[in-house]
Image 1 (tube, rainbow, N blue to C red):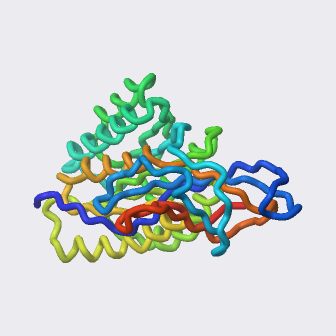
Image 2: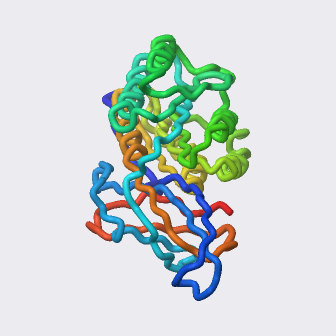
Amino acid sequence: MVGLLRSRSIQAGSLTCALVVALGPGFLGQQEEQRRVYVAVADAGGRPITDRPADAFHVWENETARPIVSAGLADNAPSVVVVVHGAGRNDTLSVRKTLAAIIETFRRTNPETMLAIMTDVNTPRLSYVTSDARTLDEAIAHYVTSGPGLILFEAVEEACKVLTKRETDRRIVLAIANATKSDPETRAALAVGATLKRANASLWALDYTPDGSRVSETIRLSEEKARLFTNWTVSSGGTYDTVIGTTALPQAATRLARLIASQYAVTYRRPAGTGQVKLRTGVSGDPGEKVLGPIWSAR
């Protein structure tokens, strides 16, 4: 089967918080705090747009507009844990190419990016994509198959634990998963969302089905898994794509990596002590553009 990319939900971005107590105009004597959120802007083809000015961005909390303090391409490197789940030996070459494409994208765009690869029941180690390049290259060269004991929701939780050890507010879990349905994973969906929220991390997911899969089975499994991925990605500020056939895996993964690498850091003001809210972001520009930003705010 020829690789075919099919895009799914587009609501993405990594929510982070930086609190600064201050007094200023706009809230009439109330204490203020500043919060930072990461968003990406994509054109109709899913390609990143990187030339939007600060005054083009908008943030709403519970549908109340918040003043923008600053907005620009994020200059702090992300920390990324790539989780490979459900890949068999027949997928080895495609997965190796996919991992190499992800790493190469971050090497070009931000050499300070830290990345870890998780393919088995283990605790991955974050490595710099440049100075520790040999470690990552060796991990790819030795990759054969996903560990049979690697359960997706457990892998995401483990990735969050690794990310919280980093003193950064730009934490990404990038999951490459073979479309399957598991009742334990279904029951764990809410727990995974809570874990991502506590870790202040966003999940970006690429759900693929191997070459040679029956089309009807592929669609059914993808729809079942989509319900899980949509919950996890949208609530945490990530995005979810599906790929039919492994030929398109490197291209699809590169697209997601470019979007992550091209995130904007948007800082805005709000009354201090606002707490958890429903967040919405927007950008002035072409109507066909998509703003990939989170929909909730941690305390």
